[in-house]
Structures are given as C-alpha cells and as structure tokens.
Image (cartoon, rainbow over all chains, first blue to last red):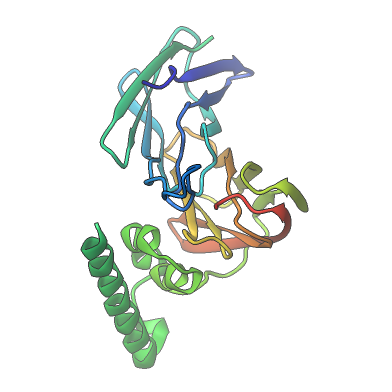
Length: 103
Length: 155
C-alpha cells in the first residue's frame, strides 16, 4: 500500500495555502518493464478536498499528471483549527483518505 | 476496456458531428460555450483535435489568465505548472497538452471561497504547447504557452 497523503495547510492573512502530495505511481500504461511487458495504467482519477464537510477543491486527473501528484491551491474563509480532508480514487478503484489540521 | 474506449470515441465523433451541424446552423444561435464543455469527452480524447472538439472549439484567448511554465523542461516527466485566473466566477481550470497521447492532463474545480489559482506537476511527451482552458459563468477562455522538452516524460 502506498505511503500516506502529505498535507500542509497554513493560514496567512486570511488565506490558507494548501499543498497536498499524494504518493502514487501514476503509471501511464505506455511504459514497459525490464522484460518488455507493458505496465498497465494505474493513476489517480479524482481528488476531493473538504473542510469541515464542504468541498473546497476537486480535481479530475489523467496519467499526464506526474508521479506522486502535487496540488497547491488557496482558500479563503477557512480558519486555523479546522480539519482539511483529502480523498483520492484511482482507475483501479483504490481509495485513500488523509486529514490534517489547518494551522 | 478496449470496447469501452471505442464506444467513447464513437460518442466523441457523434458530438463532433453535432457541433459541426450546429456551426452550419449559425454558431451564434447555439448554446453558450459553457454548456458545450463535456469533461467526459475531453478526458476520453486520445488526440488533441478530439479534445478541442470536446471543448466545442478552442475558446478565445484571455489576458486575465496567467499560465506559468518553464520555457525549457529538461525532464518531461515532471514539469511544474501554475495557473491563475482573474476572470470573475472561475469554475473550472483545464490543462491540455497538444503533444501528449492523453491531451487532457487535469481539470480543477473551484468552488466559491477558493481562489482561482492552482499549481501542479505534469508530464509532457514532447515539445509543444500547453493550453489552459478556464470555464466561467460567461463561458470558456484560454491561454497557451510553448515549451521545449529535452527528454519526453510519457514512455
């Protein structure tokens, strides 16, 4: 199983700067392994970010997003101490959830 | 998997036909650009022209969109990209790459309270142009930048 989602969310001057790193191979389905077999595609397709239950950011992705996808965005109207939750799903139906407190 | 892809392709071609017919009937009479954006079709596209069809044509360029991208990428597997929009009511930000086997890289949805700003890292198979399409209440707008890739990042 992959490593946990890394989340940093800091409020400065009323705006929260959020950085999320999601460890994932993001395999394109175009690459070959050492023995020449094509590696099947395996990539995150959707990401949902919520703060205390309301959606603040969502993404659809293809395998054209780099390995270990990184997302950075900015939120207004959130407070330090609120909980930010990240959930992703991939093309194989795996789901991963991570949480962090906004500081 | 393969038949599904074929089905999607068929839907795309049907949509392309409908769009052409609408164009012939008078594009100005047709629904707003915002309604033409079909994400399913855009993500199913396997060539850049197919993706553009899913957008209902490449939207007009807006100087209110900022697209930050290196001019030269040594490693196409990891290219940083930052997009921001000063357009009012920005709802979605799409990133497209003309030289990729999967032209639509990502779509970010921006609810109220979230700034129309996002940064990520994408793969580029070869040198070409990166496009950003922003969907607002008023329709679709775009920005583009050329980039040189030393080593492609898809294969």
